[in-house]
Length: 332
Image 1 (cartoon, rainbow, N blue to C red):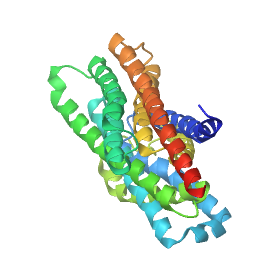
Image 2: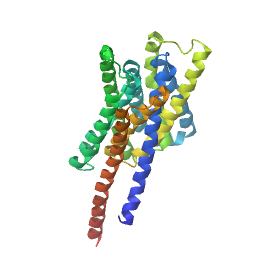
Image 3: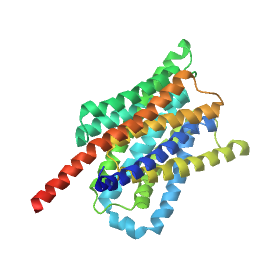
Image 4: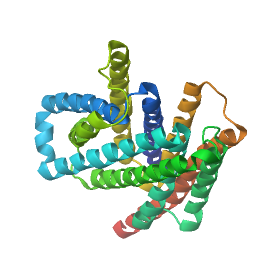
């Protein structure tokens, strides 16, 4: 590889590392419903995004000049991403975990890489379909094994719950796929590039505002109120803070870094790691070893993610070299 090619690879590697950190942090949030059980998921979503919104308000107050420079239209774009990507996705995912089980919900998120990659390559045409579909197929096979091999999917008697959980999980995938694609397109097209902290904070304000619609169902839904007693409230608040700081603020910050450096066709497969991290955290929470299918399925997902990055990098660099030679010829 020529030195210029190596220089072009550095931002992509930084983006890949940032995306992996973000997916690990998002995978951690899958523990939320189980950790605060029997408190209903509506309270959890409200608590998480109340903390996220408070953090975001502090950041915007400290960077008011950069917020004004962003402009009203771009602020509204970030706000709507917070509503769709965070409230829509996490609420649907939490409901899927409550109905169908945590590992099922984690595994369902594996559809996101397929959705994002197929839609993004149709829009951006980063690499040929025949080469791009292979790593996606590897990831899909891995997620199928993880899903089919889980010990927590239940028996035939609770098939209706598993079907509903899968439907809710699919809906959450649609919401998150939209967030990934739209967020990247907006960040790449906004000139000058928005400040990362301000953009993250605007998404946080949108997520908090969207979460307010959950106040009525939180009060009427089944489950324990977090205010029942101190033994329930303190762990609940601790988890809300952890999910907000790690799974919302830090994860979004890292993901925005990746969005500026990687095409969505690569970021889609990387999201497959979110399912692996989520399932891993659940296995640790349940204090059990993975089954053989879960183990090999997870390895296939991991391999598919790095394979997709290799395919993209291999296809991108020759085209960039061609473009550079073309520009040099025109100058000469």
